[in-house]
Image (cartoon, rainbow, N blue to C red; front, top):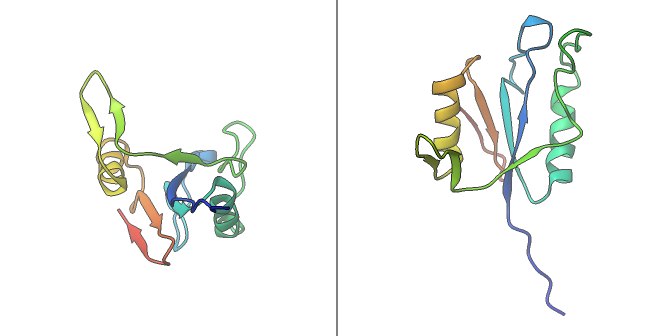
Length: 119
């Protein structure tokens, strides 16, 4: 029986501006991307990163939704109307930072090999 090898994917965790601010530290910023084989693996890697985060507020909601991660697949059609097609994770993060950046860094990527990249 042939065992299918799972391909690595990026999963996005987007921080809510709960309480009127974003938490930025050595672990997290506005958006965190984790390279993993499955959503469950990405969530398991992400949970320890937010243990010391400031809490959510009743009017703004939860700072992080740790129950799900959005899988990002490429090429990514970001806007059909404006013909914005992003070919990889770096171009996606650079676009998000340019158009919607709230923090410095705005995106933090955690690669499966242990490499971390801020954008």
